[in-house]
Image (cartoon, rainbow, N blue to C red; front, side):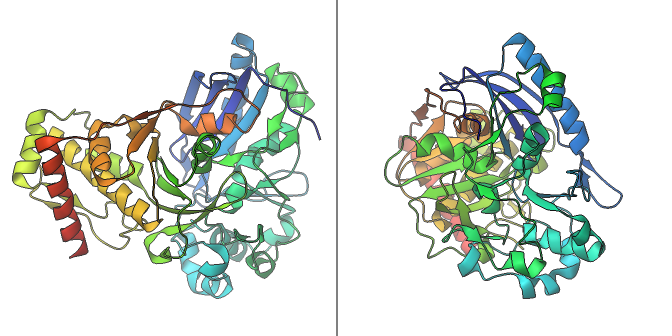
Length: 460
């Protein structure tokens, strides 16, 4: 298999989140992001069902790879994508069916049949989730909808490796994507679960590889379209929340937590205990880049932030903060009610805010309290490192620093997923983290009081 460069100078990272698709160029020595371009990850309504516009992304990636290479030079390519996704390909490597949007509720229509097939939580560490959030449920529903699809499907690959296949022509899955509540993977044995046989796809799933394995060089047609040399190595790729974990796995010791924030807030507890995970509360076992199980819990925090802020760009003032604490304004879960630790509950405002600034402040406190709840469910201990956009929300960080006894740090990279994916290749640099100062005095007291009251109301 093609070997990577000793220390690539410029690493292009294909980074597809649920909300946006991006291409980032990462300096292989400093791990700084030299350039980032994005486009919305728009879901097409159908037919035949809501699905992702893969061809639009592919055109975007080829154009931007060409532009990046012309301006900076590209020495290697890595890939990271959102989880809960699978791509079914025919014998020629084309789509056997469009790639289903995991938020589509179609799979719920055959949930009873699927529940009879899926392995228990003890085998997979995978909670039963709605819609297509369990990849196995997606495949079961797709085969139910189109009985000829199973025969048409020659290759089942996880999402990062779809882009790897477009780049290199080689089939693979990666262990982090298989371990992302698919129901198809046993994180304890590092092998496929019994579900692969039950669905009749055991001989169709591409081989599982480590995220850092090199798939191969570029296809000649990709090299011609982008100008990137054909022998440029392409890493196998990784689930995005696990990409955020990579830099810290390489430098942290003992127990610690990483909170990957984006559309989903995923709380990963390295060294945490999996024995108390509650599949009814969206806690589960992920698999890290080295193939090891990681107790986790999550909620759709980025989506909740967008729903509650409702387009407002207000920046909370001290007067807004005082008003929230004086009035006891708080948001109770769950804004997105089909996932997270309080699934099934309906969001409620206690003493609703009177200004946009107060609403954004109370929302930030809510997101911190939800994050802490997830970290507790995952058995997280030690320092907590915040990755992604929430790492820039000072009110969120202040509340979380009060709640987490091991302290809070923020990652220096604005795009932890891209840096983590770049680190799958043998770079010299490392990301840095900065400690977050815990409030003191009156500010500490009122945040502690607020957190206690929120917890009392939620548990009551």
